[in-house]
Length: 393
Image (cartoon, rainbow, N blue to C red; front, side, top):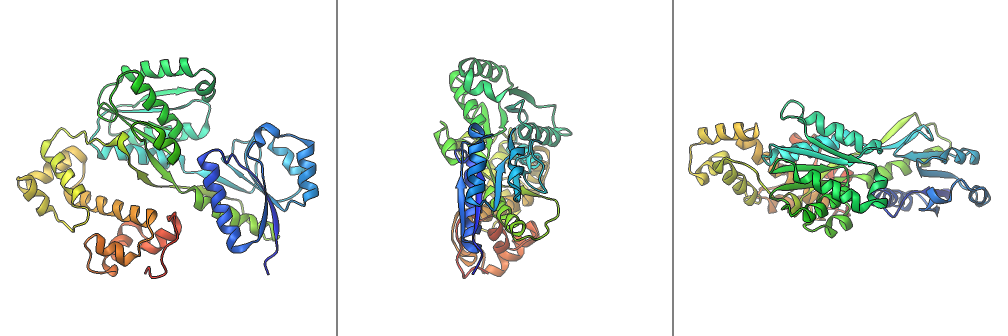
């Protein structure tokens, strides 16, 4: 029988990041526990507290997973393994949870670029390291392709304490931006702010301003009007890996210094980015055709025939507008659809293959592995949000 441990979770479960991290930890404990949990999602208000430390000591806490905060160093008094999330430098631990923030910025820019947008902007917080890293990744991706994106940053405290003034300033910034433009927001809360300010400034989303958030907090995304597109980050998997490492530490095993990385895996597109800002009518028509034929295996010739121009002419237009070939766009679209079905559904790989026009699961597995360097089953095991069927290959 597995040894039972007592684990303190000092995570902000009122937010999507903390909830998904906790879900991954719970998933691990259900497989390799049982574990008992102490949860304090108001830790940043309650700590430091001698009463809290005393309680955890009497309770017999075995390990701690905590969001890094100013007084976190007091937890060292408990002399148990600790793993910190989103480190701000207050508490250094051998194992830390980080987010691939630069990669998130890269993904955001490429998403807008593939839609044919020529103007770009970023909206974030000036006092949040993770926001600054997402901004840097976004700017780096844009560096050699377009002029420097417009930037609007403000202290996160302004959002809550000075909302009227904050919204006024943000709305004025939005008005003066060139249109159409894609704005990457550091997280979904910021995306919600931008959409609300667009309404205040009578700006049309997504036709004048396309808005993309990050974290894919479905509550915030669906509260937005129009609904907010967002980058999905596999925080739940990071939670699972965190619990794995904490278990080793509580067992007395040596764990070398390492970072657990929450990586972006997909974009959940909603109405806030439902725009294709391509000036070339033939390219725009081709892209719409490729999107609509997602359940059929099509070739470049099929697209050219639909548009009514030669294959050579269409290829030249694609290179000029998007910087890649028609076939590359077909493959990218196919991979996105496969990834979405693997993540969002419990369909077996064989069922996904039939749905997307493949003759058998071996064909789709070879295609997917060539693009993603892993099998569909490996991708689902790593990123899937739902239990998958045993009959998957």
